[in-house]
Amino acid sequence: MEEAKENGDIIVQKDVANSDRFESFLKKSKQGELDQIRITAFTTEGDPVLYDVKYEGKSYHYTSDSSRDQFGTTDDDRKNEVCQQLDKTIVKEQSIYTLRRCAEGEDHELLRLPKQ
Image (cartoon, rainbow, N blue to C red):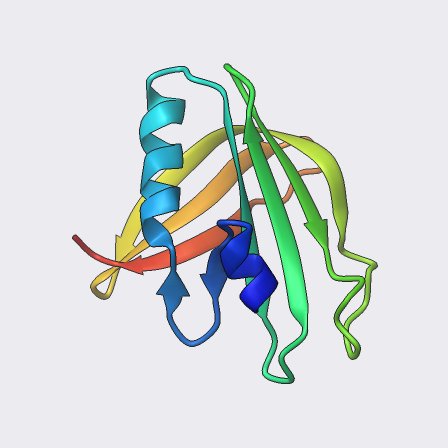
């Protein structure tokens, strides 16, 4: 987890750390600026699962990597999948951010933050 913090990753364990970086990514992408983030989510065993999202002007490029998850499977990993939009929905006092209209047909939930 220390390496993820040092890299400026958005860290998801019980809570979300470095969420201000995600807010910056949202702002930049809404303004059409290129940007990228890494979300590192830790399993209950403490293994990292990595999600990279790159905004490239008109679309989002999504990569997931669960190869470091000792009990996981890489069957659902994605490599540079293109998604057309990033949506925010509010459910039970949480803002849920999801990539939608993705090339492989599935939406990808990225993050849940307390509603602001």
